[in-house]
Length: 101
Ligand SMILES: [Zn+2]
Image (cartoon, rainbow, N blue to C red; front, side, top):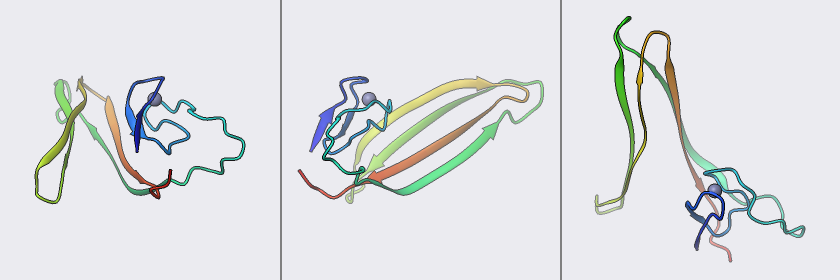
């Protein structure tokens, strides 16, 4: 049900036509319809330096837990520092699809 993207090596769903990570096209099957995935959940936010004239470091971490509250994935997505008018907008989206071959 999963495969490795030949472009960015991310683990993605085997049914994906476009890699959600690098947006690289994976299949050029003319009989295939539009991707069956739907973005079922999405969150977006923006943050900026808290005090003017003072740099602020940040770390964006995503973790996933299962029904037993066990952590099954944990990734530091990005770290950096912000100063002045600099900001970062983050977007987390969860896509689902029917479990078809
Ligand atoms: Zn990719």
